[in-house]
Image (cartoon, rainbow, N blue to C red; front, top):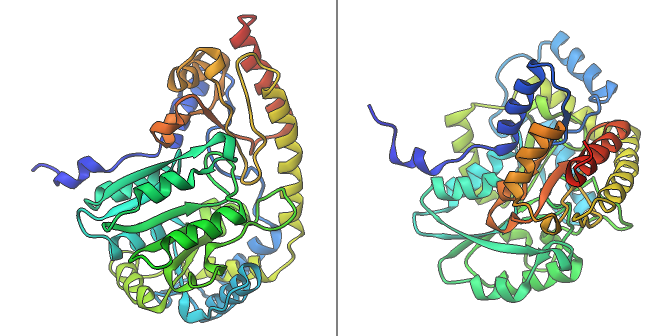
Length: 389
């Protein structure tokens, strides 16, 4: 029996494909520096682990409410009100196993075949994958290096149409580390406020930024709260990638739809991980602050090093934990150079084209690795580019 036609429209996530290749080289005795996976290399803070252990001992091992435990949704709503400067309640919160379900469920609930979705390119590849899977039309908007990897607002205005049903924003952004300036967000809000569409605001890196003021959420702008789905979670901020817990904050009419999709697919999010998530948001935040300070130290050293390599030009990212250097000056195509660095230099990175067509000319490196490994990676890349190793 053949697979359904729609399975031909779904794609893999390149980071995991490159990880498999890197592991195969390591199995042959090669030394590989892993800069491909977007995962904090820090341990989950101990008080969160302890809360999960206590939850297991207390019997939090059974089904829970599909929407999420009321106590956790209360804590999330309070956190979102405080950090985004908006007013939401636990009735607006859906707890799901990771951040990706909010992407999938929101699109599944809102999009019909032929509807248009505007999304950033280069951008998280799951956006385009889900749009195509559902039979909607992906409308990529290039992120401009000279604008700090923000949209060209004129292009956004041109691409909006009567068929546009969703606009995806991601700030701080994967893969570029860019943060959308507040003025740009205000202009975007003005463009979409009166249109029949929803904004999916992917804010999974909201706590990982290096400037003064926290990145602005478009939900905080006049008239946008009822038009915005906020995606956030625990994977990046609290080094909880393997715990699989995230959440969406959205208008109540969408909560009902997401709950139906959750109960038909996952039933609920694991109960003991939700108890750990309460501890994450309510407990000490010093581990997060230390992690971000270390990311800043690594960012500064790694980007500075990349900028000394012939043909590389690396803007300093404002958020997340990715460097996205322009490599056009090397004369290499992005995928060819990423493959060569893995095979010849033992540095695992991702081609910019893994994140869309406008990623040509760039590589993505995750600096979620040790300071020493990052400096060694710079020297391996330099030696390969200059032919000295």
